Length: 341
Image 1 (cartoon, rainbow, N blue to C red):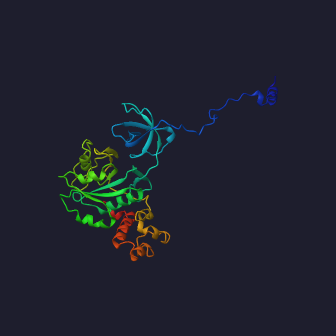
Image 2: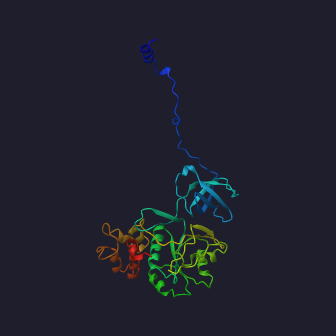
Image 3: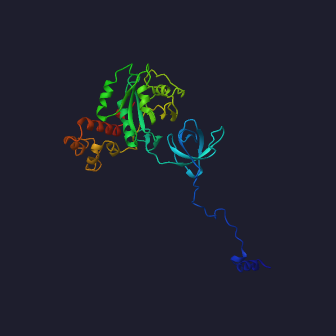
């Protein structure tokens, strides 16, 4: 047969004469996911390189290490998250459970590296309180940092509590007076006494601790949780402490509840928070905000001459001190340089 003949034979073939092998991707994928009806509830207490330590049913004596299930993709999971686990939940060495669900969060403590950083970091989830730890001396108190932590607490749904340490070195009066109009619970501790008032405030709650390095946060945690073995470092000569905590970790309190110790930080960016988020934490100003001009920053004259928050104060619905406190928080959101270390 000539080459021309062979070509003409091919022309006479149809699809019934050709066997086509199915490709690997022709099998339809099901969108159905397993229900995991036998999953066990747990709370995340620590995160380390793709592994999550979880307390089954929130009980500190039942710790399990887990990995994230494939179906969750890159779903973020942080300390304090309430999750569902399947697989080996025995907690024996060299065993892994799988996190298959993450519950909606009731509160979130977020921060950015600075006010220009678009990437927000979730520090703790589902905490009820934020204990802002600030020393009265060595290093001296930084009210700008306190203001920023208050903003993050109000915006994230946490109840802020101010804890002033090292009162044996300086008086707390000036700092306490600065926040009198905010109705901010304030606890005062000293190194030579037990923190009984703090212990009572944290009992049966999930509380996150935040503070600059060197303010005595790890020392406080060691007193609250004697077997925590948290490292305590000396304060350097320039007044900035060395970082001792390297990651957030949730520790069980002897009398019930959890305390989340977070790493010492040197900045608390608020790029993710809008002015209205701050004002929303103050009920007497919420309705007035809706009448403010578009893009009002609520800072008052000269920046915002038509801000309606002033009207609330003029009509006696809020005290001048209360308005001043709100605007100080708004200023801390707007100006990073003023409060930089």
